[in-house]
Length: 319
Image 1 (cartoon, rainbow, N blue to C red):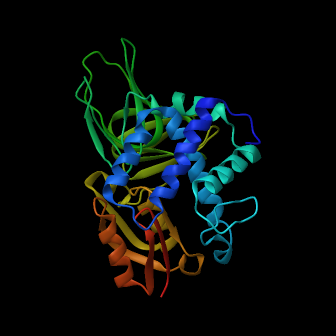
Image 2 (image 1 turned 180 degrees about the horizontal axis):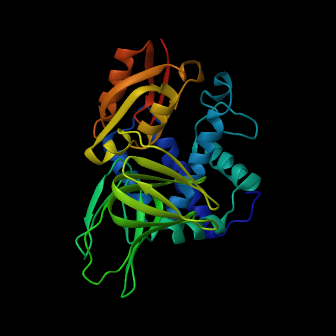
Image 3 (image 1 turned 30 degrees about the horizontal axis):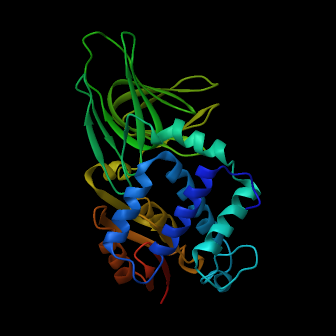
């Protein structure tokens, strides 16, 4: 390998390459998927290694279709899907921009060692010690810190829906993200963390949103805010935004590309939209616990088809 990796990293990447090939083989079955999930959850280093495989897939999706095909060797675009070529492609990506062991350490500190975390497609309900209700959306993670001064949730990844309970000790209820702090004022609200910003939606009462380096903003019921480190911009809340907490995905004349990106959050593997159909519009209510059915509904409503190389590698294309 051309980049500096220790023995544990190297072994984890080799295992990730094995699972990459396995999950994209035509003979993949549910037992393979379960074994992969067990491996993935064993330790944070495995998750770091799998993230490198996902970066490889994302890079391939940016190439023209005629170049991707079964191309997994980014060095010479060899027409093969063997473990060695996958491993070489992953290593090249690490050498061209990944952060190696630092990325692993960051994964440990951010969500793999969080107090609570949900898996892909899971919606995890929690009742905290004060009676507050928290639901973790797909692939989400939080830390919980209750002490004499405050009730604090640190959102490490993903999205949560919160219904706060009255605290007899009068402690404030806070949600903290890298972009700032949300203070609940007796309310029901959701917080969605992405790399660029934090999205806050208020369904009942009010929240106070304070950027990391900015002035606080008050959001009331029916409002949402996009929080960056410096400011919070306000918008009217889309009434369907919190439907995920009921296991639903609601689209109202939504771009197909955006819809499939959202649906893909609830599936293991990769769900890709052909750019030729990304601007088609889709409407409807879809169950998040049956994303296969959602895809079938899309093909019934629009002139598109589902190309399934494996259950974990799907592209929606024009008919």
